[in-house]
Every structure is written in C-alpha cells, then in structure tokens.
Image 1 (tube, rainbow, N blue to C red):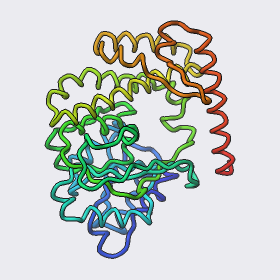
Image 2 (image 1 turned 120 degrees about the vertical axis):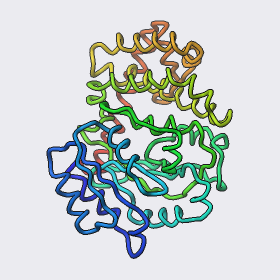
Image 3 (image 1 turned 135 degrees about the vertical axis):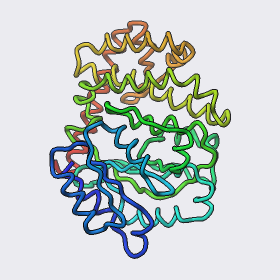
Image 4 (image 1 turned 135 degrees about the horizontal axis):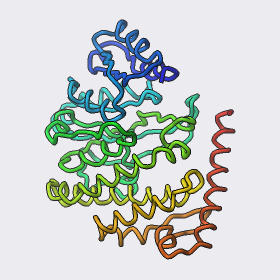
Length: 345
C-alpha cells in the first residue's frame, strides 16, 4: 500500500484544534514495503494524532481487532490504505460527531461514499436517503439497506466492545462482518449527509477483482457460511424485530451475491465454479432451509431483461443461463471500458 498511504493519511490533516479531536491508528499488517516508514513520518509530524502499530501479518480482521482494542476515540471508523476521506468533507464530519446528542445517543453514524479510480476520478456515487435524526434500523428504506457497506459506517467504540465484536482473522473479505454482527443491538442511528469516503476501484490486485475473487472465493464463501450458522443464535439476542429483520435482509443479500458471483462472474475464472456452487447450495439447504427456498425467488436484471438465476440454475435451464451470462459479460465489458476511458487509462 506504499503507493497509496501518503495520499490516504494526508487527507486526514485538518486545520486548528480539530487535529486534537481524533486519533489515527495506522495498523501495519506485516508489510514488506515502505508502509511503516511512511506511517512513522506522519507520527513524527503529528504525534498527538497519529500512532503506528507494526505487527505480524494477520489479514484484515486482525487489524480491526487490534485497533478496536486500543482505540481511545468515542467513535471508530475503518479507512483502508488505498482509499481516502474527502478532505473537504472530513472537517464537517468531525463537527457532526462533536454534537452532544450524537455523542450521547449515537450507536452508528451512516454516511455517503463514492467510488473513484486510482486518480480519484469519480466512477459512481452511493448516497443514502435523508432522515430526521435519530433513526431506528427499522426505519431505513429498502434501497438503503442494500447499500449498508463498511465505507458508510462509523460505530460507537464502546458499543462494539459491549457486544464483544471480533472479526475473523487470517482470511480476507471479513469486512462484511463489520456490517453484519453489530446490527444486533443498535438503538440509534444518525445520518450524516456528505460523501466522506472515497473508495478506490479498478486496481488489478484488488480483492473485488474477479480474477482475485476466483482465487480466494473459499474465504468469501466461508464468511457467508459462518453468518448463516450464527444467524439463529444472534437473531434471538436482537434488540427488536426491526434489528432481526435487518439482519435477515443483510444475510439474504450476501447469499444472493454468492450465487450471482458464481453464475455471472466466476464461471469464467475458475473451472470448478459449478461444483463449488453446488456445495454452497447444499450447505444452505441443510442449515437454512427457509432461506434456501426464499433465495429461489431472487431476480436480477441484465441488459434490460429479468432473470431468476438461482431458480434457472437449479432447474438446469442451460439456454437461459448461457443467455444471461453472455449478456452480463457484454454489459460488464461495456461498463469497464467506459470507466477506463473516463479515467484516461
């Protein structure tokens, strides 16, 4: 991440007393490049704000666990090294967090995010609906539930400690745990209207790149399987039916994403995709039979046409599957080319 870290940390430099309002924990996860050197340079210049932790490699979850254990701030937010906060929005966000009502009652703060390329050229916007603060989980609109990603979430630090939140270590794709498990007892959500987070896409070695996903799909499937197995127990511990319903919607979205990955993307990258999907399908039938039936009604639109990929795959409708995959490949290629032209690559 040495290519991106200076840009990431520089965006956190604000004026005046606001530098004393937050801390930055730079968790160097056993990197072999200049990450530690760059991080320590910021620590030397801003010792009251930046703190560098050099540790052995343990993957994404171990970094969050380590940071959460030592964080001093009232709230905690994850910022990946290849991403940035918008330096024009960050001071406004700090001011929002200093509000007495937010500090006293906020369990989670929801904020917008955008997707950019390596040169910070805008690719897409992900904006949540406007709400009157505070908001209950059950009041969130359906479309906002689908955008519930790590980039838009800031939690009360003590809240995560009170529910004993811990990320899975040693594997990738555990960012979805950050979005799932804390839902269980959220009372008050506050909406900050501003695109704080800038998420960098189109990197070839990025975890969401299809070729990389193909190599690591076992990790991603493993995380979703864990959530499926944990769901019955944690749903009983939910604060309200609204929280339980939100958990159900989130896990349903993740399950549908696994099917979509295999059926629309990974079949081009890994030869055993159908076998791996059959294994996941059998697992779902055994551990969550209601969800197994529910997911059959999942539909998606490709090139203006509606498909039911799970149902068609289970019923071996090969022609419909081939048509859907071909249309999706063409549409995906068109989007990628458009983004590359837009970004000048």
